[in-house]
Image (cartoon, rainbow, N blue to C red; front, top):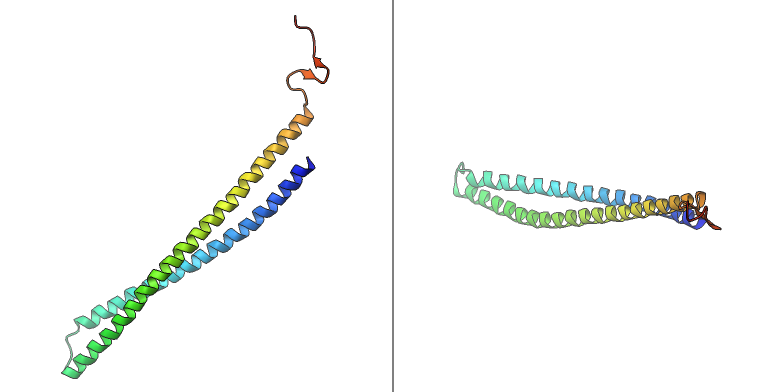
Amino acid sequence: MSAEKAKLKRLHRLERLRGIARQSALAEAAKAEAALAQVASLEARTAALIQAYRLRRDARDGSELQQTQQFVAGLTRIADSTAQDLVRARQAADARAAEAAEAERRRAAVDDRIEAARQRIARKTAENAHPSASGSGPSGPLGTPLE
C-alpha cells in the first residue's frame, strides 16, 4: 500500500510540473497570438496607406507624381515583407497553440493516472477493511448448505 501512496505522491509532483509546463505553453501561445495581431494590424494599416496614396490626385507636377509613385512602391515592398511576416507569425502562433494543447493533454493524462491510483488505493483499503464481503472467511462459508 505504501508503494501505491508513494506512486500517488510522484504523480502529484508530475501533475504540478505538467501544470507549470501548461502555463508556460499558454503564455507562449498568448505572446505568439499578440505578435500575430500586431503584424496583422500593421499589414492592414500599410494596405490602407497604399490605397490612400494611390487614390491621391493632387500632384501639381510630374516630379511630385513620381515621388508619390516611388513612395507607394516603397510601401508596397513593406507590405510584401509584412505579408511574409504575417505568414511566419501565423505559423508560430499555430505551433505555440499546438504546444499548449499538447501540454494540456499531458497534464490531463497525469490527472487521469492520479484518479486511477486513488481508486486503486481506495479499493485496496476497502478490501483490507472488509476482507470477506461474500460471507466466506478464511475458514470457509458459515452455516450449512441447508440454511
